[in-house]
Structure formats: structure tokens, C-alpha cells
Length: 249
Image (tube, rainbow, N blue to C red; front, side):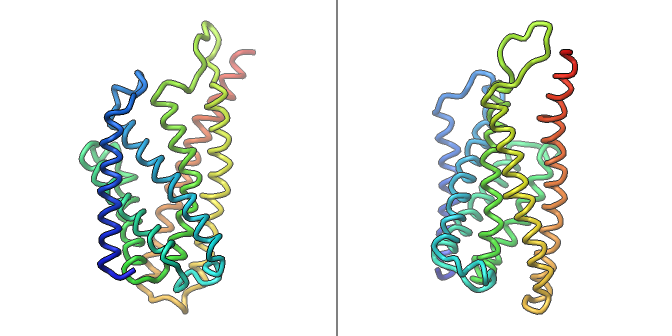
């Protein structure tokens, strides 16, 4: 795609995700989530993006496996379009968060999104490093379960009804998603980011210094954020449940 097409796809993507977010206003919202209707719409839109781009990234590598061997210059129209569409989503989500939440509530995401937009913007406009950008979108496979977890919490479907004097027990749906979330986190988030870091370390002679620095700073920032995220997930979904189980004996 030429620059004009890239701008059209990116802008069209941002507008499409904004439209999707607006459409969620007219769909039924679970009663417990109505007090946080904006957050419900935001996460539902994020789930749509993760489902689309995670599957799309796998398709890109399936149809063009040689892209794995050359993450700098090898790409296809499909992979180029994917990164442009995802850039549009991150632009939309940044504006949505900035308009509806305080910086204190969403500073991590507001910091994350400009980094991703900068790196993806460089890739789609230069038509370089698109393979590397597509690799990073494999992380969205885990984001599917991460967003489902957030929707279950918002809709009050974490614990089974009742309980009495006993500690609350998570629903089967929540427990299943919990383990899928942690499993895909390790495979598609931790391993992917680790592989990306290893690849960047070997590109000192093949990439301009400023691009290499951008990649390293961005990857380091995102890696630290993901370590914190994993700790929070384990503490909330594993350690808490373990403590509740001990308390019942």
C-alpha cells in the first residue's frame, strides 16, 4: 500500500472502532455493568480488536511463512493492512480513554498506546519492520481472554450465587477463562515478548540506531508493564482463591 492508502486504512479503522463502540450503546448491558457502561463498551471494543487482530496475525504468518525469516523487509498486503488497522484501533482507544477516564486511572494504557502507535506508525509508513509488528500482535491472542475476564468481573459473573458463611467460589466460566488467560499469557505474551527482545538484540548491524533504540525502549516498557500485570493476575485469581480455600477448612 502507498502512503495515501495507509492513511485511509488507518483513519477508516479508527472511525470503524469508534462506530462499533457507539453501537454497543444499543446492545443489552448486564445490570451490574450499567454503572460502568462506558468501561463495558470500551472493553467490548477491545475484545473485538483482539479477536480480529490475533487471528489475522496467525493468518499472515500462515500465508507467508518466509516473513518469519525476515521481519524487516518481508511483508504482504495482508500484513501491511493488519498493522494499519491495529494502529487505527490504538488511536481510537487512546482518544476514548483520554476523554472518559482520568490520567490517574488509565496512565499505564495512555503510556502504552503512544509507544505502540509510534512503532506501528513507523512500520506502516516505511513498509519496514512489518513482520516484527505482526509478531507483536500475537500478544492479542492472550488479550482475548484478558478482556473476557474484565467483562466477567464487570457483569458480576466471577463468583457463584449464594455462599452464606462460606467464602465465595468462582464460576466454572470464570475459572476456565482464568487458566486460559494465564496459559496464553505465558505462551503468547511472555514468550513472544522474550523472543522479540532476543531478535532485537541481534539486529545492531541491520537497523538504524534510532529505530533500534525506539524498539528497545518500547519493548522494555511493555515488558515491565506485563510483569506487573502477570503479578496482579496471579494475586487476584490464584492466590486469592487459594487463601479462600484454606479459610474453608
